[in-house]
Length: 129
Image (cartoon, rainbow, N blue to C red; front, side, top):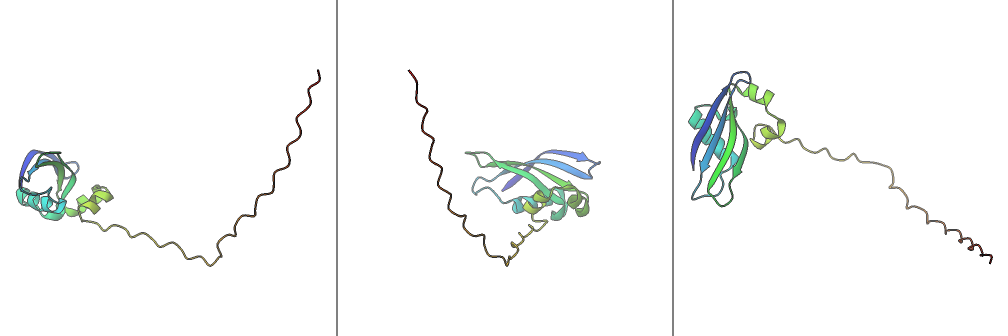
C-alpha cells in the first residue's frame, strides 16, 4: 500500500489540516479505513486519534482509492467538530446500542370483530316511457 498526499490545506479556524490523498494498492484489496489512518498518521507525524478519514472512494477497475482526511491539532477538537457517524466509522466513538423495547404487561389487542354484512342495495328506479 502506497499513500500519496495530493493536497494539504491548513484551516486555522477549525484547528486542522485538510488532506486529499490517493492510495495505490495494486496487489491487495481496498485497504481498511484503520490501515489508511495508520499510514497517514506516520506521513503527517501526528497521533492516530487526531487523523479522521472523511471519505474513501475506490475507483472501479483500478487499484487506486482516493479520499479526504483531516488532521486536528488535538483529539478534543476532533471530537467536538466531527459528526458522530464519522467518528464511529473511524473507531473513535462507540455505536450507541439500541434500547430494548419496553416489556408490556397488557394482553395484545383482541382481533377486530367481523364486519357487519352490507345492507342490500336499493332496487334501480324504473324508467317511464
